[in-house]
Image (cartoon, rainbow over all chains, first blue to last red; front, side, top):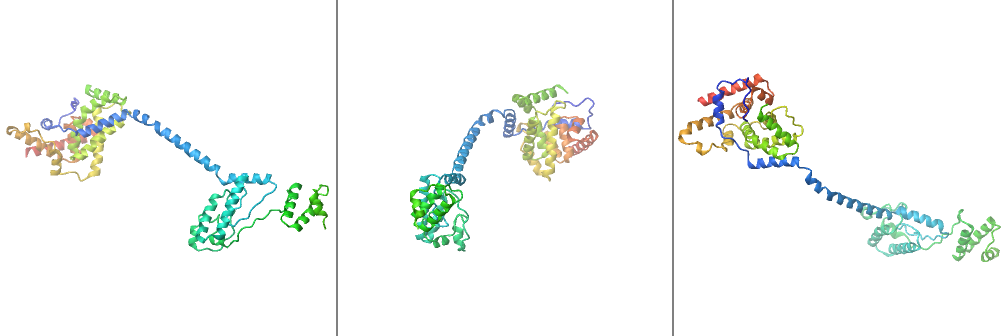
Length: 251
Length: 184
């Protein structure tokens, strides 16, 4: 600096001599790299807006696309959630007068899909799983227990307490609350079709008569005649079809 | 404020408005004196370089808050001095004796200034340089601000945060010691 001292600033003894000698010391230049670094910092400080603004476009587009993908994925997953299938199932039961349910081994969830095609598919799946349970060796049974829940649409109710199984096999079961251990599956008999014909208070007369006919068809004549007599007692004014009237009149 | 200070302040204010050329001019004015002060005060090249860059970084960062109420050089040296004091506290013990001499020997006096007839003057300057290095920190800082930057007692007091009489006392002790070293 060449700023002169203030007029009233006093000089110290011998200062002029020292100042003259110091003035002859060589100036020390900062390194070129240091100069460049400082100049870069100075330039970056006053021109910060241009570069980020150019870069700010693609992250926005990318994040928008990612958000769309996530939203689509969520929608697809929610469409496959079991709760929705349950609602469809309940609606179908309400409108379907005759419901046939096939009891399955405890490893397999009983379901009755809403659409006939789905019902057929589910029955085939259950039957296949049941056959596997009855005939397959334990290793295959484990595989079946793993695959079955993923193919079924509705979640299974909690199974009854299973007999104790070896810890290693318990570890291999992927969903212990949904499927019992393989040993329990193996002990169950092969399933047999059972017709659901229990009387319900909410059944309409037509539904009750349909069930009575099914009982006759299933050769459960005594049950059918008893249900028919009860029906005639409860609905004395209902005009019975000829075939049922004959059954009622037979001794 | 003299004309030179006004120019520095004007350049700094222009840089705060985005004028990079103003900063270039300002930097060209002060880079050598600042680096010389820092290297002779710190007595360590890497420390001096670090402090030099830190000082300018703070100037850049504070550009929008700068007010032309004080001389720019006083403000700049105040920043550098504060960083220097922090460095003293962090890095004790500092380079002493031969180590410090080596740090400054990287900037030897040019060969053309070392003929036989100039040997006495060369030796005087070398002794002065060594004598300054051996001063206590506060006296060395004060004498460098006085000799290198030609500052008044008030300005040195403002930069170092000491009273005017304290600065005067430090300078008196320092200069007496330098003269003794040169006379040996």
